[in-house]
Structure formats: C-alpha cells, structure tokens
Length: 458
Image (cartoon, rainbow, N blue to C red; front, side, top):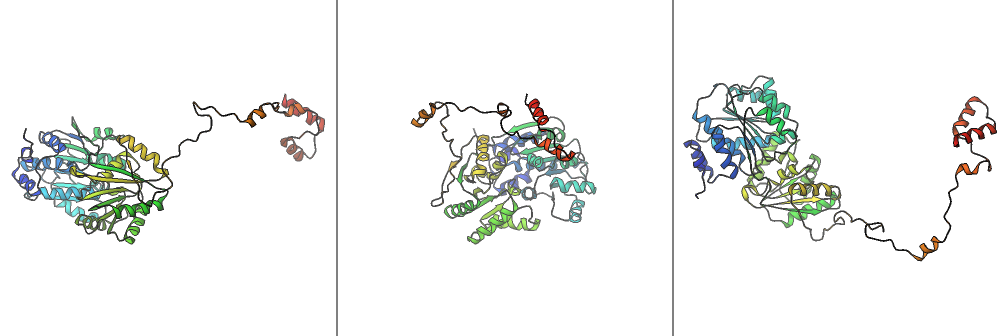
C-alpha cells in the first residue's frame, strides 16, 4: 500500500507550494489522523508526544479552511492559538509564516514582555491569525482591543501546561468572548493532568473526536549519573560534556539561580553557552534562541520555561541537572531531543534527595534508566543503603552467645514502684503543692501531704 503524502491531505495549491518548499513529504501519524478530521469540521482533542508534528496538524487544516471561504466578520480574528509560553508562541508564528508564504494572510503575536500599545496597533491591522499567551490576551480583552466575535478556529496548544501554570481562568476569560460556532482544537503531549477534562468541557462546545498517539519517547536513550552533592554534579556535568559528541545540548535546572551559576561554570570551562529563564527579557530570549539555532552557541542552560514547544534541530543531548518534579515535565524536557524519530540521549544527574523521585518517574514511564559512571568521578553515593540486618528479619534467628546464656541464669530484675515504698524515708512533695504553699505563705502539715499523696496513688 502506498504511503500517503501531504498532497493527499491538503488540496489548496498555495499551501501545497509552501509544503513543497519546506520539504514536507509524508505526514506523521498525528497529522495523518488529525488533518482529515479537522477538514471534516470536527472538534479535536489530540494527545501526541513532543516532536510529532502537532503544530502542522492544526495549522494546515485551519489555514486551508479560511483560504476557501469569506470571513464571518471582516474585523474579527479568524484563527486564535493559545500557548503557555512566549517561546512556543514564537515557534508557532514562525511555522505559520512559512506556511502563509504564498498567501496574503497575516499572523500576529501577543505575549508578555512587549508594550501593550504596540500590540494594540498590530491588532488594529486585523491579522487573520493571532498567537498569544493567555495572560497578555486577557489584558487585551480588558482593554477591548481584541475582536473574536467572528472567530472560526480556536486552538489550545499544550493545554495541560496552561493548567499547570494556573492560566485556566485566563483561558476561560478569552474563550467566553469567542464565537460559539467555532471549531476548537485542543493539543497536548499529555492528557492525564488533573482538572484537564473539566477545562475541555468548558472550552469545547459540542462533540469532539479524540486522537491518542503513543506518548512514550521511542528514540531516546535514558541514562542517569549518581552524585554525592551539587558540587559533584557540576564536575560530572563538565566531564559529561567534554566526553560526549553532540551538535547541541540543553541542560535543565529547577531554579533561575542555578541556571545563572551553570552559565558561569560552563563559560569558565570554554563552552559556548546561552541561558534561558524567567528573568531574561523578551529581546534577550529571542537572541539566545537564535544563537542556539544558528550554532553560535552549542549549550543552552534553561529552566522549564524552555521545556515545551521548542523545536530546535540538532539537539542530541538533554541533561537534567535537577530531576524534573513530575513524569510529564520529564517527558517534555527530554522531548527536546530525539525529535521526528531521530535518535536522542537524556542524562539525569541524581543525588540521594532525588532518588525516590527518579524511581517514581521510571515507574510512571515504565522505563529503567541506564546507570552510567564518569571515569575518575565515581562518588560515594550509589543508591539507597540496603536494610541492615538486626537479627530480627524474617527467616533469621538471632545467635545465642555464651554471655547470653550466662545472663539467662540471673534472676529477673524487679521494678520497684513508688507505691511500694510508702513511709520509707522522706517522701517527695509534689511541685504543685510546693507552689500552693509558697503562694499561701505556709507549708501544709506533713501528715496531710502524705495522706493526699496516698489517696492520689490509690
């Protein structure tokens, strides 16, 4: 049977020309399932692994549809795409511009980090496609600088990540202003996020076709290095990079401070490094990613702000300097390598505090990370200590020594209780009575105290 090609899925001649220029030939599994359903007018709920071609799967059918018919409202946005991060928004805009090359359609981006007045001016030019983050788009709705009354397509890309980031209220604020008769596509690499189904019911109006493609990474070698502490991790990282062959590598940390510290460490060791985290300005982010794509830097140190949506060719290695907090976040991190069925490698540096988390992620993925070592840098920590035998474990009988036998002949020691020593020597007066006596200015008779003590004991 002949393998389908993009020309079998897309009929518009302008889009076909752009597809040929981009070198698209055979559609990926998610594209093969999602595009025909979208062309047929279905709402979609799609789950597929990172790097599987989800962006083209929602852009191509939506663009083809608006090219084929007049707008519902000429002053309204026709396609709205919501993403959790600026980086993912920028990537989608780039892909859209490539597909729109032979059309007259325009795409605009609305994200944080830029002044509202410039974005308002862009929106007044009425681009057919708007890509943005929920927080900033919510601001524009409050300023009444958007018009979604004639919206034909609403796309939520990485919806579970938006839920993780607490953006569901902004998403609902936006979708409530959109035309109800729209087509809605919800795409993500994972769908298990708690609360996602509730969001789907509020965003997708009517029935939807659900498409699930295997999410497990199938071309990524997953390994781990054990470390004693963070200083040991730094030595292991430098040695790993020096001994590995790669075109590009992304190193993930859990904090902005660690990202900055690693940037300094790697520069000191003569690596060409760029850094990406929440305190970097919009312009700096763009420059950093451009340099990384162009090969002017070969190492990108990033927090999870870069874990989703970045499609950068040539990333052959991902390093988790800190283990991800969840299995889903781990999947998105390592999904930066091994894209489009290319081989990739992911190495996690694990210390004692991260052991249980790592094992939990292994169970979640149904995988076992290969344990590797760096020559000359093997640490003391080699996993949790095995339970030490106390002589009480099941199936083990405690040995009896000669000393034990000797001790067995002694009479058992009898505990002498206070009540058995009545009237022997001086009895201790309870603190409470001493306090009363001190306050009242007199000491109670000794016999009365003894009687009270005896009554309380009995």
